[in-house]
Image (cartoon, rainbow, N blue to C red; front, side):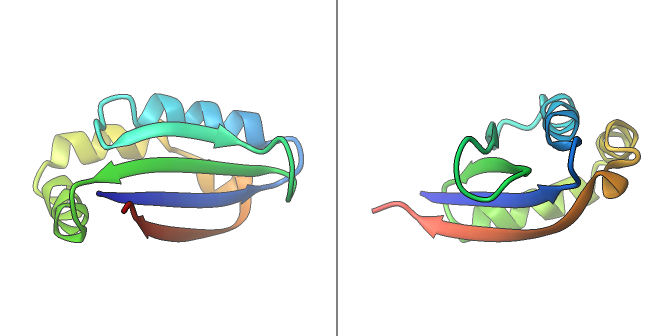
Length: 97
């Protein structure tokens, strides 16, 4: 099992807005399990947690999205303006033992 954390550092005042946007945009994505906001540590973090059976499954999810233009268009519409809400981001990929 692979767990992916897509981590965004939101601009001040935007973390909850960004989290709500991610929650709405990913509601049809079974891989996305949680949208998290920080309670300790660095401020203004929004983390999208996804689960995949393998790295191959993670890669295939991107390929599948590219082949479904209607789903991609829906996602783009739901995420409209998200780039203005965060300062930086990163991705962490973990293997569960």
